[in-house]
View 1 (cartoon, rainbow, N blue to C red):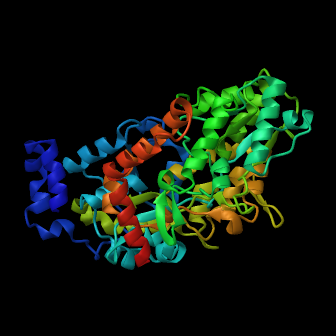
View 2 (view 1 turned 180 degrees about the vertical axis):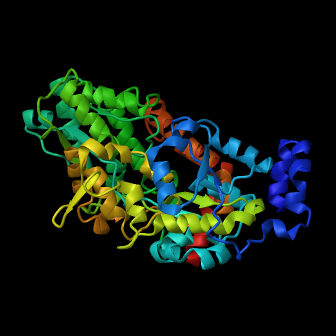
View 3 (view 1 turned 45 degrees about the vertical axis):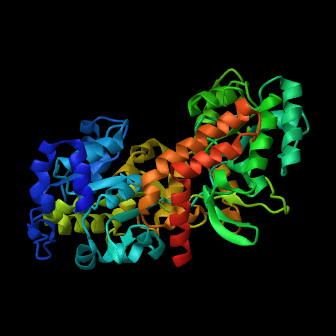
Length: 511
């Protein structure tokens, strides 16, 4: 627990005194899991959750929270991290020894807690109380939470490994100008130029958190934050800013920006502003997530550029072809959240695992997971063999917050249930289907999607990611190209890029 104690000292001496006995006092029972618990006497569990956007009273009273209680038999008292400075608050809660039986953390927060040696090894509890967990969570997901053979959390994999960042075009504008969805960097330039000439707008918009427009970067062989590249005969994993073709990508984007083909406000605007420009006719293309499609359709149907129909409004560019004429696209994988237990809360670990085990159970006798995720047949959804699960719109909205209450996922059935959510809006289902066409052949995962926590990378991650994001916009908008990229890369490497790259490659070679 030495790393945790260093963190504790950084807060205050009083905090050290408060939890010092837990961490270093030699009371071994504090971290021993009781495997002889009586599961018929279920305690109320206290669970720390990510920020929901609602107040704590709401998340405790939500119908989905009550559904979890119904299928598991456990009463749960939920608390949540704040929307701002969540990690700092999490560190303080751990420093104070707050008694949460379980915590649902982002993968980055989980890595931070692992680095602080703050989490309980829950392997024994899973062995005894988690038979369903072992069956429905894949080995690659378990790998993200396993260190030296010990499991420190329950991984929550997304419902589907999506290709989800297209460039969305105004299809009516393309049709009017007799243009097609471009497939190469040259075609994209020509298409944007034609739209600008006809419509007098800064054609392509996106937000300030998008230093890599994946659909365009694919044209330069960049498909993920961390991926393999072969440079001078040596194959290694590199970050996108350190990719051999990154200068070409930046030069291309700088050219688009300089010629008014990219929205001049992208370095400072948020996603909502970008969407408003697109739906308001101030842009003809937007790089965004497919989860924005419903909002985009609503804006186009009701806004100043109103179209009376929801059909054929949008066209999608999944990814430009690379230099070899092949299409590959960024595909999200891995586990977004991990549910874990503070090391000093071992006493209820068996109950926590039993609770999660019940949530993931999905059999002919007990469709617990299905009930949580999409609700009841005939009320929330209906089913047919050709289409699968179809939402009943008048009630299905009740399940909008269901995924918030997951603490792990049943990977064997989650995708088929989750598609009911995609079918809520016809255009959303269409774009998802288009993006996922032959996804196994064209999708490229980030090398770290299924990696365990890596200590050095966790330490420098936020620094090197934010710097890369900022410097892209500096090069595109101010430098007008890569003239200072060498200088920026030197700083990126010294600020943590080198140690992160070395650690990641060492892990990757050991796989």
